[in-house]
Image (cartoon, rainbow, N blue to C red):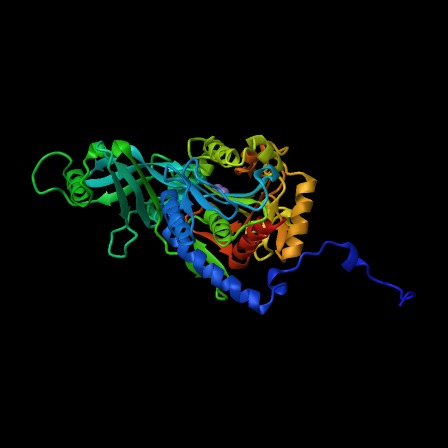
Length: 465
Ligand code: MN
Ligand code: MN
């Protein structure tokens, strides 16, 4: 009625985010549960980047993707992948529009914080054998002691042969651990700060205690080397050309009595990697070419041949563009990239580090981070208002539940992702991903709802005109 007087304009004028579970249908809830189960399997199996690449390739080939060969015909609908040294992967589905219209790129990373073995790892001290380690990525060192670990990776032999190593994944296998001090003798340790109480050099894996039968020096070390020689045919010198890493051994499990969350190692950033992967594997012929990046080395700054600062990505994209006689820069300037990386979920146990209105919360959907960086937004690519508006439009059309995110209070700290390296290429880029609790801990927590919405977000962008 024209003359009806309104008394409360809040619903119209205020932005009032709603809990995710109040926004979805029973049918979608079933889809969410199914998605979460598939993700749990992926997370449990892909504990290091090499395993993530291998598993992703197997899943892609099952969906008709083939390895890119330079010069191959790339018609709309062609599904290809580029394996960068078994540690990073790019997948693409050629779209209906020419590459001069740009691509839709989603970029996640598949490396995660862990303990790498040093190149001379094996040592014995007082008849106990250890592996020396060097941590990879940002860890709180105290979280990695007194927790079961597994060893994954490869040993590259002089012959060129690659030996795959996995110790601890099979339930019949032994596991490894780093010891901590008993509280009875931990008085002095307890007075140190959390970052000083356990040192980097102190992160040594306990790997054996029984001496070799013959008398002599380093008998326990010899016995361990003998076991490794039997199992893998390697000698101590072979460690020099090995990439072996200790990762948490905990199984991926549902968390909470309502089973609404998932606990596991490496949600950062495999929750987003799986979202992208599932979205691209389901594509037929998208409007614009869809690209899925599973990058390595994000946790150490994206340098190196398999990181996002590597030109390997540009070389691959240049090849795609060359097949359509399009200059790479023409493609980049019209492209859009969703840097799919996790954000911190608001944790009521630690309210002091976050500003609630702008921090992502569990179960409110995929977290969009307009800018990352620290202090005065140092080190951010800061996506434009226009880019955020584009996401609002696409997500509203496709029923993607999303929220704004920022990494803690203004002066609290900060961090970065691959976003700026994509933006520096001349590609409009914005961060989006799953809010995580206990990020970078050996056992991280995410909400199933947010994982599913991250997948829906990537799928919506791939399908957008
Ligand atoms: Mn990340
Ligand atoms: Mn991280």
